[in-house]
Image (cartoon, rainbow over all chains, first blue to last red; front, side, top):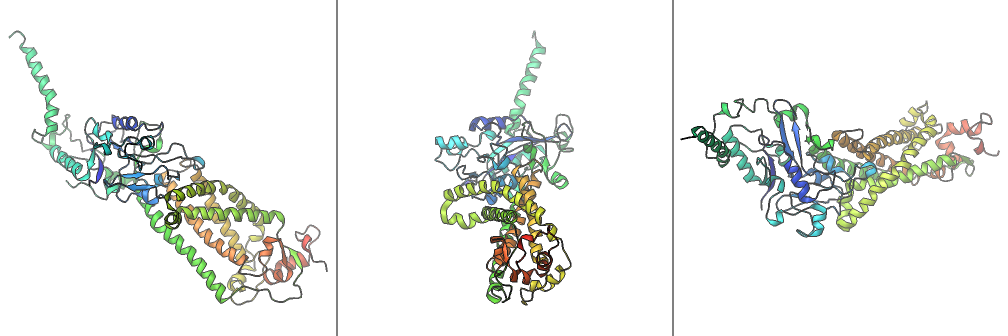
Length: 198
Length: 343
């Protein structure tokens, strides 16, 4: 099976936020929760850089490690998913996540966060693939339909890449060689303990 | 040709449209490095670099267009440190500390045995040690601490010990209730610690008896009875441990009950780490406290049970207190009037 990853080629990201909107729409994500977001570094200054970020589906995922009820699991495609039935809303996964991916429906005062929600790599949850229960809790399961995550699929500049780690790394490598520069694979060292050697 | 100019414009327009498509398919030659952007400037000159930014600022903070300000944090590799502390350091340290405490107490019990009362003509006479408010505060704090310790340790050891026995669904349901209990029963514990601080701080200030008591290890090993006032040095250590660790737990606990109200992400990580560490240390200390207050020493439990202790016990463990408070009452306002023996 493939080892699914995200790669944001930030030299191409134009901060259009279409990935954010596509994700919210595809999965009917509740108000206030953003599974994906675009962060702009050095906004308005020379060298400004935008990066689209969501759950990176880490190797040895910190969220899964610190979860006190072990509600996370990793699929055959190395996608990190969780069970909202088991989640107790303790918030540890948000403290552990290097990318701020876990989101909660409520602010969390007095431990009232509710069930955690995060990017599923468009791969649903532990329920039956493409079932109504799965859609209500986790959104659409595009991976089960043979499709890649919608955020990357509809990225207008193909800045955001999703797919097997080897393949998207190769696409990025070719781009960098062709255009002569690249600002690197943002988050890869922290998430996957490796970067793409050019 | 009537419109040569128009044709030229059309040709330029078509070429412009087609250019990006050609570029995407990679049929053009790689441009020279100096001319990589339309403006002619090298786009990487000023561009921020992940590794550099992480070295300078330790985490990547930017701007976002959504209201959730926490989402502006792009990357915090400290999450990996938190993972290491939470999953490697804490479970081992906590497990070893608590098991070592229990083993040490068991070893003490089987070598030294219970600390028994010596025969004394004063046996059977009861004197007042703790009034109702003091005992109520002690037991509210104690019972809430036991609930907090069990539900707190469950965050670490539940998935390792209970989860394999009862399965994911039952364990998640129990842990959900354990979390509610932990978050609500924290309040009586906080009030209890503060009340105990106010009630007992006067009697827990170090005094001239403490050094000798500590040097002789309270006489637990030798069987001697170094003098002490109302609280001996060992009890003072328990008191100050409860105060220091209790307040650490209170502060770190309250900032976790209101996440991101006072602290940022790294602050929350450290609050959780200090909360777990302080909780573990206090649990180990309280295990020792429970042992010596019940099984470990004959006559000790009565102090917090009925509130009255045997005069022989008081004479052995708190001789200076007995002298001061009960045998030579300092006027009617003395705290010990209720317990003055009849003779």
